[in-house]
Amino acid sequence: MYQVSLISGVLPWVIGTIAFASFAVVLARWPRRLWWSIPVAFVVAVGLLIAISWSVQLPRKLHGTWPRSFFAWSAAPIVAVVATILAWRDSRIGHRVAGVLAIAFLIVFAADRVDVYYGALPTVGAALRVPLPGELATAVPFRPTTTQTRAPATGVVFSLRIPGTVSHFRARPAYVWLPPVWFSRPRPRLPALELVAGSPSFPGDWLYGGQAVRTLDAYAKTHHGRGPIVVVADQNGSFLGDTECVDGPRGRADTYISVDVIRSADRLFGVAPGPRSWTIAGYSAGGTCALVVALRHPTVYGAFGDFSGDPRPNTGPWSSTLHDLFGGSLTLSTQYNPFALLRTRHYRNLLAWFDTGRRDAAYRVAGMRQLALLARRAGAHVIEQAPPGSHTFYFWQQSLQAALPSLLAATTHPARLVEVASAKPLHPIVAAVAAQ
Image 1 (cartoon, rainbow, N blue to C red):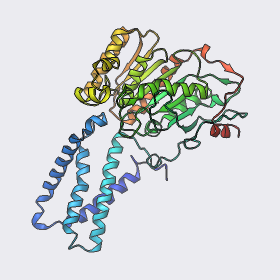
Image 2: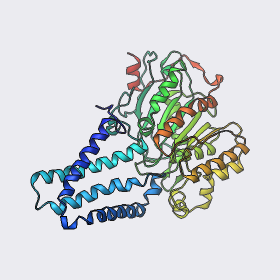
Image 3: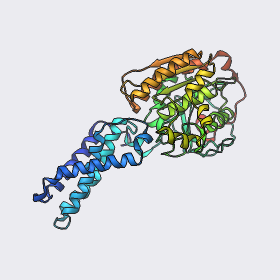
């Protein structure tokens, strides 16, 4: 049941059939003398939704484009509510049930249309947040434990709370993926990959919609169990949060991502020593985050992947961005401006991977090209791509698959893969599985 697709196959067809069949029954009870008002009701509902979306600044918060048909799908349940209310008093129980079904299933159908476009929740299991393949348990405190271990067949996933010790940032639980070779003895010191999501987001979006576990397991399978230590970190703090990885009024997200997460992973999992052993990648607002954090901390990150990110941190118009992200400080905004960073610093040892779909917003594609040019002038090794695709998880899945080998090559050096005979303490749930 959990593997049933929400974006193709039988279930979307069943949802649509029930929704519009019950909707037709409801509309049949619409007063005949007012049938001409049905299309008017649709137009009014669409107009209302457009007005609401702009009043709450939905386009800005979603950081993306979407088909205008979303408004039509969302208008249908509103019309169903009106039709059900008009016919309620004179309707039999069957028509009332049809009205309730129409409203409920039209809402589900509209939500499913949005999901079909973005691909954020590919299955019923993803929507219900059931455990991922290889996932061990929910977030638990990290306590020292030692055990004799052997390499599992695939990577291991678990949730972990990473405290904002330095930043005091209140992040949601992170996800950690450990490659099979991490459990071998002697244990190798591996490079690390930090994945950050867009906004709005849940902590596991990279793993569910982004299919990162599948990508990482496939990479490890073709590299004798090797792969990076992966931390899917939260830079937003909430579903609608959007820090753009700035140390500002919304919290010290930059410090959390570049200091707290790095130190915790180094301490708990033994990341390869030396500078630039980390790479960071993200999509949408997370792509902007990866870009800015890597440019601000070149001794920490050896590579970054910017997938469909905006050219610079923003929350909409410049006036609101300056207020929301930087507290009105032009000096602080300059410190997080990637154009200013690339013009004033040199990045000889940095791999910069830019990937934006050709059907994405035009300003993103243009911004990517400008940033790629500046990065080359700043000495970075730049890989710039604009394949077919738009601002969706389908595209970001492909972006991670394409970028992963190059990102890891930039942060992997024979000197960093130091075999250590003494095992570090293991996470208790990881130790339990590794000991089997």
